[in-house]
Amino acid sequence: MTILKITIEDEQAVSLRYLLKDVSYVKKIEEESVVSENAVADNKSSLERIKQILEEAKGKDLFKDVKDPSEWQRELRKEWDRDF
Image (tube, rainbow, N blue to C red):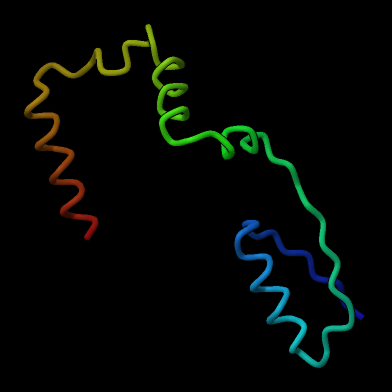
């Protein structure tokens, strides 16, 4: 007998459980919930998460190396075009 362990998002657990119940050779389904470090952040609203990120970024001078913001944006867009 082989035991397989998989990790999936909570939202997909129900669907996967239903699929596995229909497979004749699956003998047993066990479920273990894992609380991640981001579990608290997952329960926050989008606005609260954005506020938290902005608060954490304060005083870090994230864009201090950007000399010309317009040119910097053009270069970023070129990269996006190449990825598609």
